Image (tube, rainbow, N blue to C red):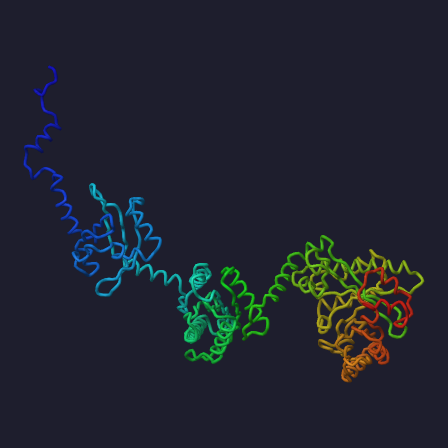
Length: 621
């Protein structure tokens, strides 16, 4: 009872007994017999494999690997595994392989393009990992799987993903992939010109083709355009060493040609010229003959410091310039013009807040009687005291204010400020005839605000008499007015406010129509007055008789219609003399005074005329 072996046998004992005494065919292989079994499996395995020793040389390869590479597996013995499956051509893969070989990394898996003995190629997934049960001898198992079919499918899917189905050109995604790669530092630091160019083009009036002929015809036209652009790129490839430019459809009717390693602006500009010429001949599309032009934005610069976003923003801006300049042309990116555009955008973004912050001020330019030289009125001219760009004249921001609608609150401020100032002059000089103040009005103020109510409220608030307020509108805004604009002008005129047409002679010049408008003043455009050159200086230029005849005729007709005439841009006494002789009522210009602050106007009131000390002195720079 002491637990000796005389008791019943255990299950483990029976198993051991079976191993030592039973049928040897049922027992596991001994360690000595195991390599032979492994060898048999290795040789017959459907997976291509090779055993690699610690030096990276093939010890043995199975039949599947030999068949995959098109050679006798025994011939592979002694080969460097890295050469066999092309591991050394990629620096990253080569480093990882060396780490596996030294036991510092557990596995390497990569995809390589292998070349068979018969010259054909295949894509293979290569795996390198330590060989299990290798004993004291270090070794690796190299396995190779043919993934050519999968790779081909992936490439087909990628091609579909990266190409436009209509034109079969590379699409926006592939274009930006190539552009990004071209701008990477390692691309241009190891050879090449280090420059890049883009022709960004848009078909002019393509929407009309879709609307008139349908989208199917539009798609065929896009495909035909793509063919011509491709030929342009192929022709360009014959004249340069960098290969053909990449032609891509970026969407809609927008295309781009990417010139890598460009040789300079001239090369990209020549390509743009070639493109425009190629698109000139009409397109024969079955039973239709269509013509199309394109606008092209051209950008060429150093790749260093350039980003895809910045490059394409410049290209887009330049394309916009090409369209704005008249279409059917190419335009080169201009940094100065772009800086102006950026400044314009910055001004537009800060215009409304600037009104609230009180960054605007008014200056006043006298309107002087031609007969007696006395100040009859002043024109209020706005200035923007911009904290970044300094004092800005109205031509820098008024168009922006009209575009975004901020001209309405800005116009109210100008009207109120000018009327207050005119009333202060009147009160400060009770013995002088009161002067009127002339305020420019934009058409959008007529449409987007109740101008009549604004004027009435301002006159009541300031106490200024209606006849001391003159509102100036451009000729193109007044001539042909109908509906609400005409009603507004009549209401203001009935109120007693003077209506003046500014820059007269540059637009419609329909004098007969003036008789039906509530207009009381014509301001002749300075272009006519500049023709009155009578200075003795040699470079003053000759008088223009045509300008004199035209001005005299306009003055006579205006007077017959009961209108007064103001001449703008009067700069010399000879001009003033001639204008006075042909009957102009008032003059405005640097001869009398530049635009000045309100206190300078007080000094001019009561002056004796252009020959006296007041007005003439103020007119000197």
